[in-house]
Length: 203
Ligand SMILES: [Zn+2]
Image (cartoon, rainbow, N blue to C red; front, side, top):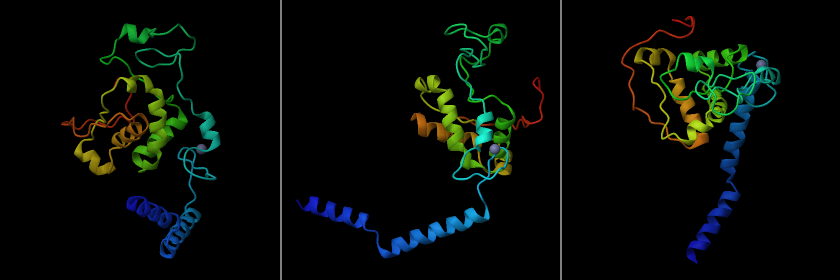
């Protein structure tokens, strides 16, 4: 009985925030409003001001092409026609990759490229939940069989330059959606490799 009483008292206290808490909340939203007025949220792709919240503007969102089935069961490359379940692309047959299955969330077009660039180089870690949701959706079949997520670490010199490991941020977002744990510290990058941006396909 005592427990019940104390629980209901706690509930009442929670429902009726103190004056100080209300004041604090008010100040916080005033500060937030001031920041939003000073820096209206911009579309990460075209930098058009966004009406509310995060994400892409309506125009960029309409241009983004999420990859849907049918696609190659191995490479995840979209097919223009549906050859039936489990079929492989000519590329996967002619030059089989070292992995069993890969999936991609979106086609790498102008909107996707702009998103990746701001995410990687402009500290836009706030984009990770949105991008992670797309990735979790694209990789849902793989995630269903997965024991863990392994974000490839950055070499310490690059981590120092970029300040965050964006792959780890995405893995965290995918883990939130899928419940598959992130296995931090399970692999090590021992060699600094060149940046992919600006490299040709063969490079
Ligand atoms: Zn836009």
